Structure formats: structure tokens, C-alpha cells
Image (cartoon, rainbow, N blue to C red):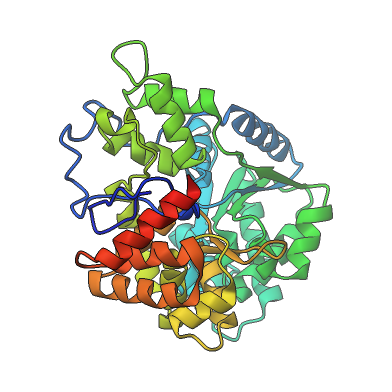
Length: 423
């Protein structure tokens, strides 16, 4: 049984409680095992694999749209599955078709007309006369339906010659006025040569309201493309594209299976592992997870941007591990009323509530590792001490080991006894 102790490990024999399944070891210095350096020759830009079906579907929808049958497509997938990469590749393949783009951002949901202003700004000086609301940027109290009418007219004008692709990424973060205006324009598309191409996370688009839900679920012009995780063959293709594939001195099947297991088919995580982790880590015989530095650089700023209560909840959950009860997480975090904080943590993509199971889990184990690895030593040990008091049996024992800072003969004896019982 191996417990994370800031880059060290204690071998305590078997793992009677399965506590190790929710923990992993990594060195304090994330570059300590990157002695091979970045993969030479690995492409710096996007690498897209396993999305031929989705690209073909979008191409077909664009053909219908430019023939005067407007279409609305929403690419859905969890964070890191490559929604933006898919859209970028699609636009690159159809560079001859004019495009306008806007994106939502969680921290900007309260900014009125944020998404609409992005679209209007791209029209710039080419904005035809008769668009007073878009030309000046809609005022905070502007009528969404009136703004929607101008958007529809703008789309019609700009699509008349060669068609138009209107990209709206991260729709779930659209401010409500923009979402209502876009919905108005989408519902009234008739013969405009327009493809509205959005993206969002599963189950998060409902925050846009019932109107959007009805449009996406029942309108014949709408298509929803759910991005699957990458399979083994696709991950092998990704490794080849990144210069790590067989047969020329590439990774073995075992290493690729480790990448598949640890990334769970998430392209962002898989690419980070293939790009940053040297062969001896990916080919290793241990089952520990390793956190690529680039993922920490993406994940931790989002953690620190959370309100304090939501951030504390996420940190406490990283200590308790998956399938932890919300009441336990809230008690460990010191958040007496956790519902609002939980909603924020879920919306930010850290936690998932599991109604049919015990409680909470992280959206990905590597995200939990990033959060756990960011906790200072003193605070981490303190949280484990409190967690040990809240739990029982092998789970409590695991927290006591993680909280230990010095040799503890009594604890060592208990570990030996637990191992003997398990044996």
C-alpha cells in the first residue's frame, strides 16, 4: 500500500481498504522525471484524430446551409474532448466560407450582451446601415428580441453571397440577453445560407433556458454531435502524430494502454501525457498516475478563480477522494451551506454529483491530482488528520498515514496489523 507523502512513498504491503485507488504519488518538482525533455519534433499546434465522422457531418450540414437550408449544429462534449479543435479544423477546411465567431466565458456571464458584441465587433465597419443596436453595442436594457431581429438581418446580409458560419463556442456560458437574442435569430432562420455552429458541455446547455432546450431537442434544423472519448486505435494515431508511435522506436502497446487508462480517452489529457512524459514513465510497471505540468497550468488557475467556498469544497473532495458524501466534504471544508458552492464547482467542471451513488466525484482523476498537488504541506496534513477522525477502518488509516510528518511506531504497527488481516 503506497500513500502520497509529498513525493515520497511508504510501502505498507497490501491495500486492505482500497484507499490507494483514490490516491497517487508524484514528485514535488513536476519536471523531476522529465529528463527526456519535450518530445522532439512534436507538433506545436492542434492535432485532431478520430473525428472524421463529425467533420463529415458538419461538411454535409454546411452544404445544406449554403444551398439555402439554414442549419444549427451543436458540438457537445466534456472539457478536453476537442470541441474547439474540431471546430477549428472544420473552419480551416472551409476557409472560403465567411465566418463570424464568439465564445462564452464562465466569469463573464453577468456581462450583458458579451457574446452579441463579439459578433457585432467582427462586422466592424462593414456593418450595414440600419443596425443601430449592433452598431453601438446594445445597451444593458435593450430588448433581446429587437437585438435578435438585427442579428438575423446581419446573418442574412453576410451570407447572401457565399454563405456564413456563425460560431458560438461554450454556449453554456452565454449571458442571458445574448442567449435570448441568438435564440430569436435561430428560430427565425428560413432560407438564409447560414450554419450556426455552437459548442457546449453535456447537461450544461440547459442553463440557457427552456427555449433553447426545445430548439435543440425538437427543431428539424438542429443537429447535436456528441464527441466520444478516443479509443485505442485513435490514441495510437495520436501517439504517431506526436512522434511517439510505432514502429520507429515508439511506445509499446503497454505504454499506450497506460495512456488510455490514465487519460480515459480524453484527448487533452492524452496529448499532455504523450508530449510531456518520457518513455520510462509511460513504460513503467507501477500503476501511479503522473500529472503533466501543462495540465496543472490549465487546471489550477480555474481552481483559484472559484469563490472561496467552492474552492474549499473542491480541495476537501480531493482529499476524501471519489464517491465521498457531500456532507463529509462540506464538514471537512468548513462550508455549512454547501449547495451553492457545489453548483459553482460543478459548473466549473471540477465535480460531478452522483444522485444514484454515494456522493461526489471528480470529472477526471488527473483534475483531482492537480487540486491535491496544489495543497500546501501543512494544510494537506491538517485536512488528512480531520478526515481520519471522520472516517473508519482502512480509510481512516490511510488518512493518518497521509497526515504523518515523522516516524510513528504506533501507526506502523497498525499498518502491519491491517496488512496481516488483509493477507
